Image 1 (cartoon, rainbow, N blue to C red):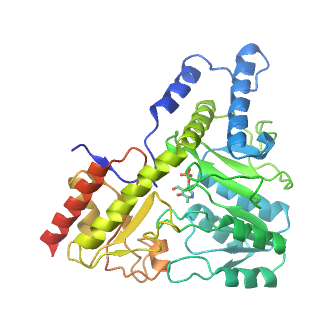
Image 2 (cartoon, rainbow, N blue to C red; image 1 turned 90 degrees about the vertical axis):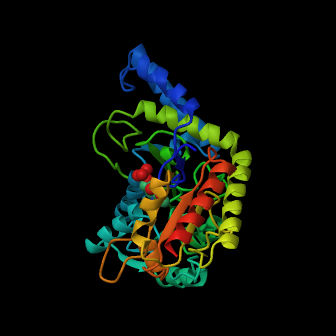
Length: 380
Ligand SMILES: Cc1ncc(COP(=O)(O)O)c(C=O)c1O
């Protein structure tokens, strides 16, 4: 058995067709897209074709798509620019957000720009919508930043419901959609959302490229000062190869989405079933075992405490399995998962996030479960 990669929420292998789309840009289309001669104009057209394709898939206008270096930059931009440009004085988020969101909001709160509220969670880690409404009612000029799919436990948020609440209370709504982009369809004519983000490396595209959707009703000031690229909003020569790869990866994802989803969902269901029936003391963190309310790409498993708990991931690694995880932070320490800590998972229990892609197979899942069973039988 070759090495098995079950860490697709961290990053995904590139699709060969994406590499093939990028290569000619590296080999021959090297012009600077800002140059007015033919070399430049050709590349400019390629960038605009990519933007149009992405906008088309998301059912929106190309003018609302801004290329960034990835999810972190897109999240930072949405948060900082809406606070600075729209007179936002209060933000609502949850303790389960990615650090690209949490650290940015905490920084803005520390600087005295906003008051920050954390919405309460239920025991599975879902947002308490009643509490969200109370926070919205009590605070005008609010930014709501809540992720669509959690990168550690997979919990899904209903963007329609939160979008409607934000509209009712005239709040700005940003959602970190890094883990759902290209895995679920986002129809921007239907969604009531101000900012949404994507990162190509989470859907078989290249690293270091992503985008930010900014609803046309929101007029922001530049997020990187410099040249006139990205309609004066983000100076700097464009990552042309990345942009081409991003658009191609999104096109491939959209065209095969239903088929891939069915395949990956079946792998996840098989792993849940086998782990639950073959191992004692297994739990699933958050709502990750609920196929309706969690990402089909993520399963977060909590194993019984054992002396070898710290060595658990290392043990998987020497058995040719790449996955990620850890445990909740122990008291007074920042090392560990802030998500599992917020969910009160015991730090004694090792947790592993298995995350799947279209390239994984049933044989791989069976191999991983067999190995887990033998590792745990040895350590028991
Ligand atoms: C939910 C979420 N948001 C943001 C990011 C950051 O994306 P990038 O690595 O493209 O900056 C990640 C990547 O791990 C993520 O999973």
